Length: 164
Image 1 (cartoon, rainbow, N blue to C red):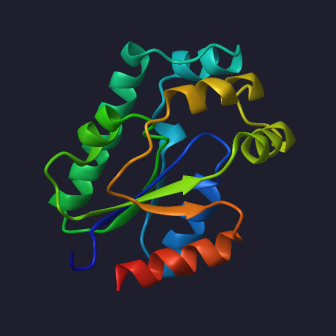
Image 2 (cartoon, rainbow, N blue to C red):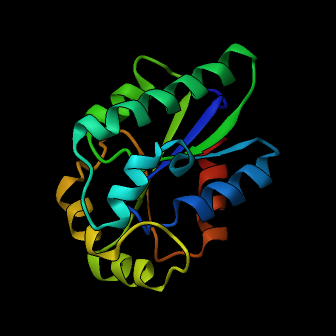
């Protein structure tokens, strides 16, 4: 792949998608789009109540993200996105047949991720949902997988190196 037009940072909630995505976008000089910002209000309320999303809840969220990705492409731009994209079907909806996306999957064990989520302040995601994220997760086979034990800066460096 030549330099991707889009970098999609994925992983369970608490894996560091926002931190890594923001740092990467800054490093590349590209815009950054946070997947959580595309959730409709009812989705946020549901997760705040500790209720996992069903596929019917995820559909409009994923569609909005894909529309934004397509708008970036249509304008000839480049961007970094973050989104849990837990299932293969989610990634298929976001990436489809596009060959201009670098898929990055942030990995970590349950204990590490849960500990991070518990420490977050002011986020709508209920820590009780971490288990459902791991249950739903279908790790991608075609992604750059990076363990979250590394510092965010080191993770960004690995992504930049992979981009060539």
